Amino acid sequence: MAKKKRKNRQAGIPAFLVFLALLGYGLYQNANSNQTTNTSAINSASTAQTEYGGLSKTDYQKLANLNFQSGQKAIYVVNQNHSTLIKNAWKVNKVIYSNLDNLNRTSSSNTAFIERRNVANQSLRVRQFVNPTGWHSNRANGEQIYNRGHLIAYSVSAGIDQSGNFEPNNQSGDQNNPKNLFTQSAFSNQKLQTIYESKVRLALKQNKKVIYQATPIFRGSELMARGINLQAISTDGSLDFNVYIFNVQPGFSFDYATGRAKVNRGMQVNE
Image (cartoon, rainbow, N blue to C red; front, top):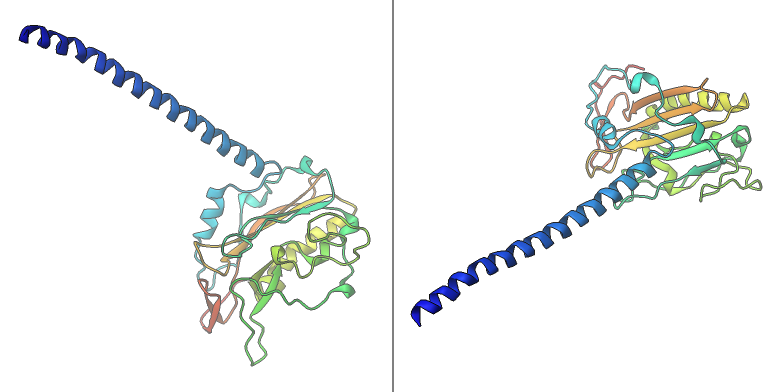
């Protein structure tokens, strides 16, 4: 009897191993199926991001890691100053406003598909009252440090409502839209970004169709952007630029985690 028992136990070992093998195979197939699903989702997200072009997440991360040094140029050329936007993606006059992130920051791209009718009447501008993340009041001595910087400039967004669609009855440009504002140094906004906004405005006045994209660049969970990537291309290719503008102010240093500024007369900015 003992021998017979031993025989059955020995015969049962391969069956147990077969069971384990089948179980393992099932788990593998399931994991492989999940991996395929996840890869598909990633590819779909990637396709959505590149439908009209723009920089990759890796490129944005590289920009976020750049440190501004006193005395250097505040404009950094990206991709040899050529846009990565796809000019034939221009189909409908609109602006794609990205949602705020979980810190209420405008940390993703806003992309505008604009034309001549979007050149705004400056007399219709109103006072800005939205306080983006990292915002602080300007100092009492009258020196302007902060601006509420528009991603897509007021001057090239006439008729665009806050959902991004063209509304002919809306004569002004984008104004107090939380999805289109970030805390920007007065220097970066008024001295540097305006250069590129003027290029876009001129192209529109020449009856060109333009894709214009602006992406504030944040490092980690900081509330004030380190800078902004601006790029544009016209459908005829005559307008084409791609730059990163550091969010800096001569004579001041910023704590980008909070947006607070402190006097630093050694901080020099080369325009």
